[in-house]
Length: 293
Ligand SMILES: NC(=O)c1ccc[n+]([C@@H]2O[C@H](COP(=O)([O-])OP(=O)(O)OC[C@H]3O[C@@H](n4cnc5c(N)ncnc54)[C@H](O)[C@@H]3O)[C@@H](O)[C@H]2O)c1
Image 1 (cartoon, rainbow, N blue to C red):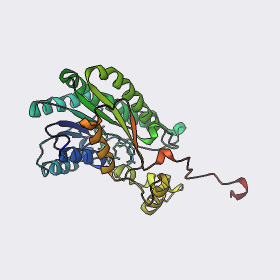
Image 2: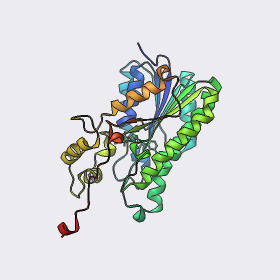
Image 3: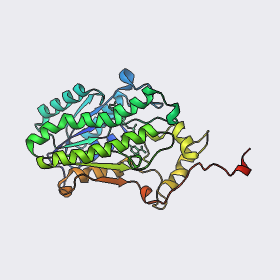
Image 4: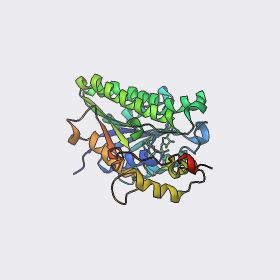
């Protein structure tokens, strides 16, 4: 049985990676989709060291949703631009007549020790990962309050619970998402709107497939995809399971949006192959003094 038949979801950062998986998973369960993302050919983010999505990626998401016989409104919109988000929501409401769920998924990552990070690099991550989530919630909240029903799923991270050495701004943004989620759940609960977050562990997407992440996972410069794959086995506890597929996170988002989770609000749900259950793992320990060159 389709769990989201006749419902409509807004997915931010929907062009690829987890965002595409959310759009497709919701469509498979019967939902129509409003999908937004940036086009890095016309509006990239300077301090992000890997390529963000292009218009062709969003078109591919649209094609995959339509192949499931669901409808999609796919628009270039930046979560740093509240008016652009509101325009996409208005178009979605005009097209579909309703909006039942939000997956606030758009996010960026970069690396530097916090004391070497420039203002712009820090602000770029906060602007997208935290303020962008708030703007997305703000764009859909009035409608959900009016219809006295809705489910918001915010994508945080295990870095919303633990630190990230080399990405303090990212961890701060993802901790912030959980504070936003818990507060919004209190504010929207009386209106019948649920708000939850997912804390993914390591997920195999373009955000994690570039040399900086390979180095971080390897614990040394010159890391490779092979290092990423072998280190990923240390990241969780499920045997033989390395980086998660984006679909594993989308499955949780579908559950949170559907009526099966009608009693769940204000929760941060890890989808991390057990990462947060681990007692701890240092990927790059400093050698004892005697071994240092
Ligand atoms: N990959 C991981 O290991 C991992 C782990 C935990 C949490 N996350 C979070 O999951 C979410 C999805 O990331 P992903 O892994 O699919 O990476 P990704 O880079 O493939 O996807 C992120 C999407 O967000 C879009 N985006 C970036 N800035 C935007 C903006 N200003 N406006 C609109 N769209 C924008 C990108 O173009 C891209 O399509 C992010 O919030 C990320 O922080 C990722």
